[in-house]
Length: 327
Image (cartoon, rainbow, N blue to C red; front, top):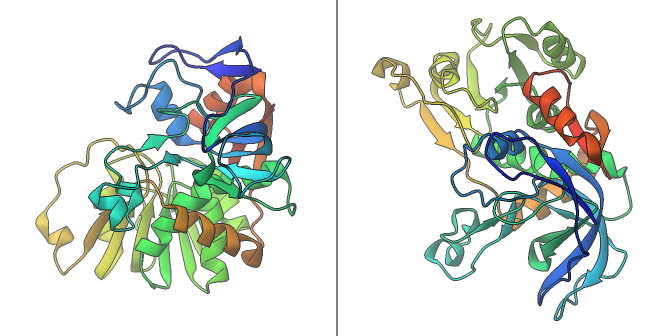
């Protein structure tokens, strides 16, 4: 099989040909049909996630078909189309898992970070964290749902029931969850990098009530602000944009330091939340909801060998929506 592997922090991915892996008990081998390229993959490449195990094959938005079943796997079938996301395994026994908070597991495994992911023609996955995807929809359109969609969904749920939602960083996650917000009857306001008029136009084309640079004042008081960009300086800005009692939810796994800000910006019961990973319940819930919403992710496909180009385009804001590798 062919893989794109990271051998050192800050390095480029290198193509390798490896023997076909065998699934162990409770695992499946998946022939990868599409794998989304996520900002978390950039954090892995840049050495910003200390748990990363090198060498590693990145990629955690995997859509593929079951190619081989490991011992004891009975709920999946050969040839079935499945998906794999960021949380690749949880212990099931720690206090968090026992409390149905497996996203906070003490000894988790993360796809494309601590276990090889989907920037490959084949991958091995824990069958318990592998989701049936059905036969509706294109592989490339489904792939971003496995992280950008799932994390966006958990972030939106944490925002509460407010009607006016700010989205900071209008990339893969925001453009998916914006569709869910509109379907729910909410308004969304898009904040982009200053000067990124293309992203602002993209947001308006998707129904934004307003779109502008992140350093611009919002034209209304927001009920909640969802931050998908890994920029800590956006937290104080978002706090100033939400109403009394409003919520600011940080949806990324990594963010630059949050600068000091006056207490009065937090006062009046404004709240700051972070989202950590996701649960299988989140996945089943969101994947069942997606067809009802009629989600249509905007994707740009790349061949597997051009994974570095896709990552560069993501890093420098040269694409709208999501990049997807197609082996």
